[in-house]
Image 1 (tube, helix red, strand yellow):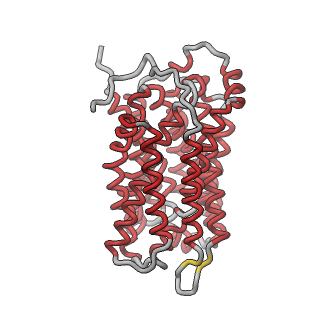
Image 2 (tube, one colour; image 1 turned 120 degrees about the horizontal axis):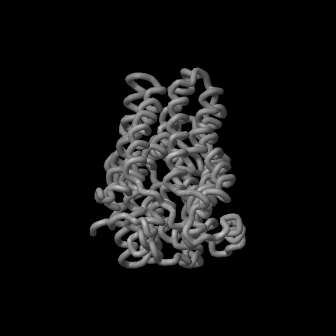
Image 3 (spheres, rainbow, N blue to C red; image 1 turned 30 degrees about the horizontal axis):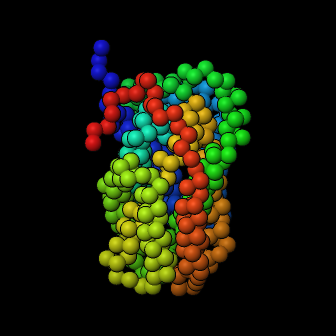
Length: 409
């Protein structure tokens, strides 16, 4: 019999799913000037294009939660990722704003569930003692999307128009789908208990520990996304970063995260998820306050702060996600992560709206009251430390019997 693929190889394939999903979401925002000009969009119409992705992901995550634990996770991710790839292709060939809006909503619906299924697969295949490291590998997709995906997408749009990034992502999606089909094993360990999945979902809704986990994630995302949407205009308008260097924020921050995210996962496995999460949050708070209250800085100073923001503010999600995957047993994990994704998407929408209410733009391009968003982010971050400690481990302590060979240290 052929040797099964290594655990690391499976995790890299799952990270590729996350990369294309995050790339598809992230590339929209820097494309705003081109899209608004070529499709004759107002600011509200463009915001609807961005919001459609998250709202659809949240709604579908909620609707699918009662059913995702009833099927082989590999089968579900293949269907969901196929839908995402087709939707991204539709974005690339959309002839007007209405068709693009529909395509974005479909992409968010399938992309969101693909992302939650990836984390469920990692949680089923990797035992708890190595799980944070496994999640760290998968979550490097976020950093790679920022460091490589966004700059490359912007260059493609500059050379061949705004449709090209979506066409390229859909092409990459076809390749990744084939890799998933070939390399990811069936994941049915959560089905072997023989439990009534409808009853399991009802028990999940009554599970106070799962509820605390969902609130924990929502508060984390609320704090993070209170500053993320307006971070770039703040850096350009208030911190005096030349716009031509803005891509370096993503390039440097993403590159640093590619290196540090797996290391953060290993530290969380070795020294404790809660301890590492707490340290990451405290350092992230200092960085957030420094950025939010900064005046004009030299380019190197701005890029240094931005790099630290990526490492610590984004990196805290690695031990946080590991804490969440232990909150419920395998039989309810898929539904739990779907509900968690739903809460995450809705919280990001609320945070973005909150930022729009608080911050106003000055005639010189700077932002009023951005520092208020920094204090909101810090308050939510400190609250998340208390919430994390209330999320108890409720995992069976075993991985799927179909688990592949382990990640090497």
